[in-house]
Amino acid sequence: MEKHDKQPLKSGDPVISIHGLYKSFGDVPVLKGIDFILAKGENVAILGKSGSGKSVLIKIIVGLLKPDAGEVLVFGKQIDLENRKVLDKMRLRIGFSFQNSALYDSMNVSQNLAFPLMMNVKNLSEKEVNSAVEEVLDAVGLSEKINEMPSDLSGGQRKRIGIARTLILKPEIMLYDEPTSGLDPITSAEIIELILEVQQKYNTSSVIITHDLTCAKKTGNRIAMLYDGKFVREGDFAEVFESKNEEIRGFYNYNFIQ
Image (tube, rainbow, N blue to C red; front, side, top):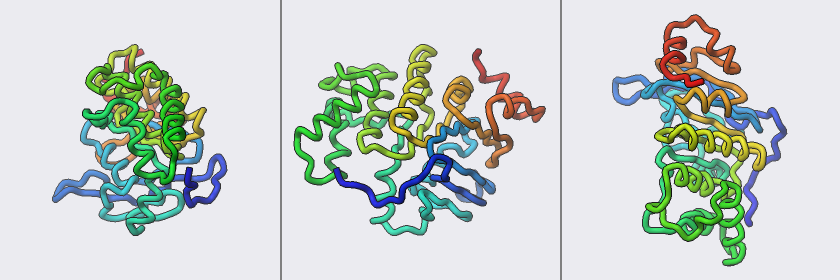
Protein backbone atom coordinates (compact mmCIF):
# COMPACT_ATOMS: atom_id res chain seq x y z
CA MET A 1 0.00 0.00 0.00
CA GLU A 2 1.07 3.56 -0.62
CA LYS A 3 2.10 5.47 2.46
CA HIS A 4 0.50 8.84 3.12
CA ASP A 5 2.68 11.92 3.44
CA LYS A 6 2.54 12.52 7.17
CA GLN A 7 4.52 13.35 10.26
CA PRO A 8 4.38 10.85 13.13
CA LEU A 9 2.19 12.00 16.00
CA LYS A 10 2.46 10.99 19.64
CA SER A 11 -0.40 10.20 21.99
CA GLY A 12 -1.86 13.48 23.24
CA ASP A 13 -0.76 15.53 20.23
CA PRO A 14 -3.67 17.44 18.63
CA VAL A 15 -4.91 15.93 15.37
CA ILE A 16 -7.76 18.44 15.09
CA SER A 17 -7.52 21.98 16.43
CA ILE A 18 -10.36 24.48 15.93
CA HIS A 19 -10.41 28.10 17.07
CA GLY A 20 -13.16 30.70 16.69
CA LEU A 21 -15.21 28.73 14.14
CA TYR A 22 -18.30 30.44 12.74
CA LYS A 23 -20.72 29.08 10.14
CA SER A 24 -24.06 30.43 8.95
CA PHE A 25 -26.47 29.46 6.19
CA GLY A 26 -27.96 32.64 4.82
CA ASP A 27 -29.12 34.67 7.80
CA VAL A 28 -29.21 31.64 10.10
CA PRO A 29 -26.12 31.24 12.33
CA VAL A 30 -25.29 27.59 13.13
CA LEU A 31 -21.84 27.65 14.73
CA LYS A 32 -21.06 30.71 16.82
CA GLY A 33 -17.41 30.69 17.83
CA ILE A 34 -16.43 27.05 18.31
CA ASP A 35 -13.15 26.08 20.00
CA PHE A 36 -12.28 22.37 19.95
CA ILE A 37 -9.25 20.07 20.16
CA LEU A 38 -9.08 16.32 19.47
CA ALA A 39 -5.92 14.58 20.71
CA LYS A 40 -4.32 11.54 19.14
CA GLY A 41 -5.86 8.34 20.51
CA GLU A 42 -8.83 10.15 22.07
CA ASN A 43 -12.58 9.61 21.58
CA VAL A 44 -14.64 12.78 21.99
CA ALA A 45 -18.43 12.52 21.95
CA ILE A 46 -20.20 15.69 20.84
CA LEU A 47 -23.74 15.89 22.18
CA GLY A 48 -26.51 18.17 21.06
CA LYS A 49 -30.09 18.33 19.89
CA SER A 50 -31.00 18.06 16.20
CA GLY A 51 -30.10 21.29 14.46
CA SER A 52 -27.44 22.25 17.00
CA GLY A 53 -24.67 22.16 14.37
CA LYS A 54 -23.06 18.79 15.14
CA SER A 55 -23.11 17.44 11.59
CA VAL A 56 -22.10 20.83 10.16
CA LEU A 57 -19.01 20.72 12.36
CA ILE A 58 -17.75 17.38 11.06
CA LYS A 59 -18.49 18.35 7.46
CA ILE A 60 -16.23 21.38 7.99
CA ILE A 61 -13.54 19.13 9.47
CA VAL A 62 -13.40 17.02 6.27
CA GLY A 63 -13.64 20.06 3.99
CA LEU A 64 -17.16 19.40 2.69
CA LEU A 65 -18.18 22.84 4.00
CA LYS A 66 -16.08 25.99 4.37
CA PRO A 67 -16.13 28.03 7.58
CA ASP A 68 -17.22 31.67 7.48
CA ALA A 69 -14.52 32.57 10.02
CA GLY A 70 -12.04 30.86 12.29
CA GLU A 71 -9.24 28.34 12.00
CA VAL A 72 -9.68 24.61 11.41
CA LEU A 73 -6.42 22.65 11.57
CA VAL A 74 -6.36 18.93 10.72
CA PHE A 75 -2.97 17.24 11.08
CA GLY A 76 -1.57 20.76 11.46
CA LYS A 77 -2.93 22.02 8.12
CA GLN A 78 -5.65 24.65 7.76
CA ILE A 79 -8.13 22.58 5.84
CA ASP A 80 -10.06 25.36 4.06
CA LEU A 81 -6.85 26.87 2.64
CA GLU A 82 -5.38 23.70 1.13
CA ASN A 83 -5.54 22.87 -2.57
CA ARG A 84 -7.54 19.90 -3.84
CA LYS A 85 -4.55 17.56 -4.06
CA VAL A 86 -3.50 18.17 -0.44
CA LEU A 87 -7.11 17.98 0.73
CA ASP A 88 -7.63 14.62 -0.99
CA LYS A 89 -4.50 13.23 0.72
CA MET A 90 -5.72 14.45 4.10
CA ARG A 91 -9.12 12.85 3.56
CA LEU A 92 -7.47 9.47 3.08
CA ARG A 93 -6.40 9.74 6.72
CA ILE A 94 -9.97 10.43 7.88
CA GLY A 95 -12.75 7.86 8.03
CA PHE A 96 -16.29 9.28 7.82
CA SER A 97 -19.02 6.91 9.03
CA PHE A 98 -22.24 8.35 7.61
CA GLN A 99 -25.51 8.19 9.51
CA ASN A 100 -27.18 6.17 6.73
CA SER A 101 -24.05 4.00 6.10
CA ALA A 102 -23.96 5.21 2.44
CA LEU A 103 -23.49 1.78 0.88
CA TYR A 104 -23.89 1.26 -2.87
CA ASP A 105 -27.07 -0.78 -3.37
CA SER A 106 -25.84 -2.28 -6.66
CA MET A 107 -22.65 -3.71 -5.08
CA ASN A 108 -22.35 -6.61 -2.69
CA VAL A 109 -20.51 -6.23 0.62
CA SER A 110 -17.13 -7.25 -0.80
CA GLN A 111 -17.43 -4.80 -3.71
CA ASN A 112 -18.57 -1.98 -1.39
CA LEU A 113 -15.48 -2.48 0.76
CA ALA A 114 -13.04 -2.92 -2.12
CA PHE A 115 -14.23 0.17 -3.99
CA PRO A 116 -12.55 2.92 -1.89
CA LEU A 117 -9.36 0.89 -1.72
CA MET A 118 -9.10 0.42 -5.50
CA MET A 119 -10.02 4.07 -6.11
CA ASN A 120 -7.38 5.47 -3.76
CA VAL A 121 -4.51 2.98 -3.58
CA LYS A 122 -2.83 2.13 -6.87
CA ASN A 123 -1.17 -1.09 -8.02
CA LEU A 124 -2.80 -3.42 -5.51
CA SER A 125 -3.12 -7.06 -6.51
CA GLU A 126 -6.45 -8.87 -6.30
CA LYS A 127 -5.02 -10.90 -3.43
CA GLU A 128 -4.11 -7.73 -1.49
CA VAL A 129 -7.57 -6.26 -2.02
CA ASN A 130 -9.29 -9.47 -0.94
CA SER A 131 -7.06 -9.71 2.13
CA ALA A 132 -7.90 -6.13 3.15
CA VAL A 133 -11.64 -6.78 2.69
CA GLU A 134 -11.45 -9.93 4.81
CA GLU A 135 -9.49 -8.11 7.53
CA VAL A 136 -12.01 -5.30 8.02
CA LEU A 137 -14.98 -7.67 7.78
CA ASP A 138 -13.41 -9.73 10.54
CA ALA A 139 -12.82 -6.53 12.56
CA VAL A 140 -16.56 -5.71 12.50
CA GLY A 141 -17.62 -9.33 13.02
CA LEU A 142 -19.37 -9.87 9.68
CA SER A 143 -17.06 -12.14 7.69
CA GLU A 144 -19.99 -14.35 6.71
CA LYS A 145 -21.75 -11.43 4.94
CA ILE A 146 -19.02 -10.92 2.33
CA ASN A 147 -21.21 -11.80 -0.68
CA GLU A 148 -24.50 -10.33 0.57
CA MET A 149 -26.22 -7.27 -0.89
CA PRO A 150 -26.92 -4.22 1.33
CA SER A 151 -30.67 -4.84 0.95
CA ASP A 152 -30.22 -8.21 2.70
CA LEU A 153 -28.56 -6.67 5.78
CA SER A 154 -30.17 -5.40 8.96
CA GLY A 155 -29.75 -1.76 10.00
CA GLY A 156 -27.05 -2.70 12.49
CA GLN A 157 -25.20 -4.81 9.93
CA ARG A 158 -25.25 -1.93 7.43
CA LYS A 159 -23.77 0.34 10.13
CA ARG A 160 -21.00 -2.21 10.72
CA ILE A 161 -20.26 -2.55 7.00
CA GLY A 162 -20.17 1.26 6.70
CA ILE A 163 -17.59 1.39 9.48
CA ALA A 164 -15.61 -1.43 7.84
CA ARG A 165 -15.51 0.56 4.60
CA THR A 166 -13.95 3.52 6.39
CA LEU A 167 -11.41 1.24 8.12
CA ILE A 168 -10.12 -0.30 4.90
CA LEU A 169 -7.95 2.77 4.25
CA LYS A 170 -6.62 2.59 7.85
CA PRO A 171 -7.63 6.14 8.84
CA GLU A 172 -6.08 7.95 11.78
CA ILE A 173 -9.24 9.92 12.54
CA MET A 174 -12.74 8.45 12.64
CA LEU A 175 -15.80 10.69 12.39
CA TYR A 176 -19.04 8.97 13.43
CA ASP A 177 -22.29 10.74 12.53
CA GLU A 178 -25.09 9.45 14.80
CA PRO A 179 -23.75 5.85 14.87
CA THR A 180 -26.65 4.45 16.93
CA SER A 181 -29.48 6.40 15.31
CA GLY A 182 -32.48 4.25 14.43
CA LEU A 183 -31.13 1.12 16.12
CA ASP A 184 -32.70 -0.96 18.86
CA PRO A 185 -30.95 -0.98 22.28
CA ILE A 186 -29.19 -4.33 21.74
CA THR A 187 -27.84 -3.36 18.32
CA SER A 188 -26.86 0.08 19.66
CA ALA A 189 -24.83 -1.63 22.39
CA GLU A 190 -23.04 -3.71 19.71
CA ILE A 191 -22.15 -0.57 17.71
CA ILE A 192 -20.91 1.14 20.88
CA GLU A 193 -18.65 -1.83 21.60
CA LEU A 194 -17.40 -1.76 18.00
CA ILE A 195 -16.45 1.93 18.30
CA LEU A 196 -14.35 1.09 21.35
CA GLU A 197 -12.77 -1.90 19.60
CA VAL A 198 -11.85 0.27 16.60
CA GLN A 199 -10.19 2.81 18.90
CA GLN A 200 -8.08 0.09 20.51
CA LYS A 201 -7.23 -2.00 17.45
CA TYR A 202 -6.58 0.81 14.97
CA ASN A 203 -5.37 3.49 17.44
CA THR A 204 -7.83 5.96 15.99
CA SER A 205 -8.76 9.42 17.25
CA SER A 206 -12.53 9.79 16.99
CA VAL A 207 -15.28 12.39 17.01
CA ILE A 208 -18.63 10.79 17.78
CA ILE A 209 -21.57 13.00 16.88
CA THR A 210 -24.64 11.82 18.76
CA HIS A 211 -27.75 12.72 20.71
CA ASP A 212 -27.64 9.27 22.39
CA LEU A 213 -26.40 9.76 25.94
CA THR A 214 -25.68 6.06 26.44
CA CYS A 215 -23.43 6.09 23.37
CA ALA A 216 -21.69 9.27 24.55
CA LYS A 217 -21.15 7.99 28.08
CA LYS A 218 -19.65 4.68 26.98
CA THR A 219 -17.55 5.78 23.98
CA GLY A 220 -16.31 9.25 24.94
CA ASN A 221 -13.07 9.78 26.83
CA ARG A 222 -14.37 13.33 26.87
CA ILE A 223 -17.81 14.79 26.17
CA ALA A 224 -18.61 18.20 24.73
CA MET A 225 -22.15 19.59 24.87
CA LEU A 226 -23.14 21.74 21.89
CA TYR A 227 -26.06 24.11 22.44
CA ASP A 228 -27.21 27.01 20.30
CA GLY A 229 -24.02 26.97 18.23
CA LYS A 230 -21.55 26.90 21.12
CA PHE A 231 -19.93 24.38 23.44
CA VAL A 232 -21.55 25.06 26.80
CA ARG A 233 -19.98 22.24 28.84
CA GLU A 234 -17.03 19.87 28.46
CA GLY A 235 -15.47 17.07 30.50
CA ASP A 236 -16.32 13.52 31.47
CA PHE A 237 -19.96 12.45 31.63
CA ALA A 238 -20.44 13.35 35.30
CA GLU A 239 -18.76 16.75 34.88
CA VAL A 240 -21.00 17.66 31.95
CA PHE A 241 -24.27 16.66 33.58
CA GLU A 242 -23.54 17.95 37.07
CA SER A 243 -24.36 21.34 35.55
CA LYS A 244 -27.40 23.24 36.78
CA ASN A 245 -27.83 24.71 33.31
CA GLU A 246 -31.50 24.14 32.45
CA GLU A 247 -30.84 23.21 28.83
CA ILE A 248 -28.24 20.59 29.82
CA ARG A 249 -30.45 19.14 32.55
CA GLY A 250 -33.40 19.05 30.16
CA PHE A 251 -31.32 17.23 27.54
CA TYR A 252 -30.29 14.66 30.15
CA ASN A 253 -33.79 14.11 31.52
CA TYR A 254 -35.30 13.69 28.07
CA ASN A 255 -32.67 11.44 26.52
CA PHE A 256 -30.83 9.33 29.05
CA ILE A 257 -31.64 5.63 29.38
CA GLN A 258 -29.96 3.87 32.28
